[in-house]
Structures are given as C-alpha cells and as structure tokens.
Image (cartoon, rainbow, N blue to C red):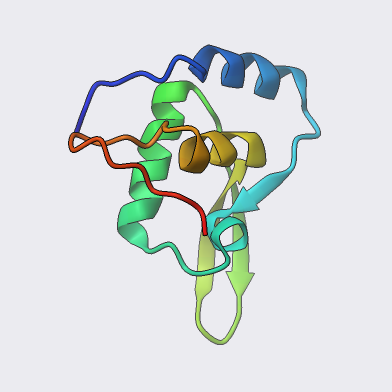
Length: 96
C-alpha cells in the first residue's frame, strides 16, 4: 500500500469537523451494490489516514444481516472521484 496522502485531506477534516449534520452513507448506498470486504477495508484505511470517523449501523435484509459502516458522503465523493484511493499502480476506482 502506498503512503500517498491526498492534498484535499486537510479540507476533508475541516469540513467534516465543522458539519455535524453531514450525510452519512454506507458503501452499498453510495455505490448501489455490495462493495465487499476488500473495498470496505480500503475505504476504512483511507478514512483512518484522513482522520475521518465513521459510524456503525445494524442492517437486516434477505442478503445480509449485521453491522455496516457509514461514511460522510463528502469523504466517499473524494475517495471515489477525487483520487484519494490511488493505489500503488495509480489506478482509481470510479463510482458507477
């Protein structure tokens, strides 16, 4: 894993700390499909590096029952669209 720190991380921290009513979303809600454990771990790692705190929500549906993490939508936007998730190969996962 790269030690790359996205230049917008400081903005994320400031905006998230100022906005206590920020929209929180699961990866499923954001992507429109199950993200899987590997992508979930990558997002959690990037959030930890950025100082972004998630929330936990319990869900129960025919396909999954258990806890899911919720992340600020602004963080997910930056992660999936802004290059925060660049890995060693430089590839970026795009929403959609």
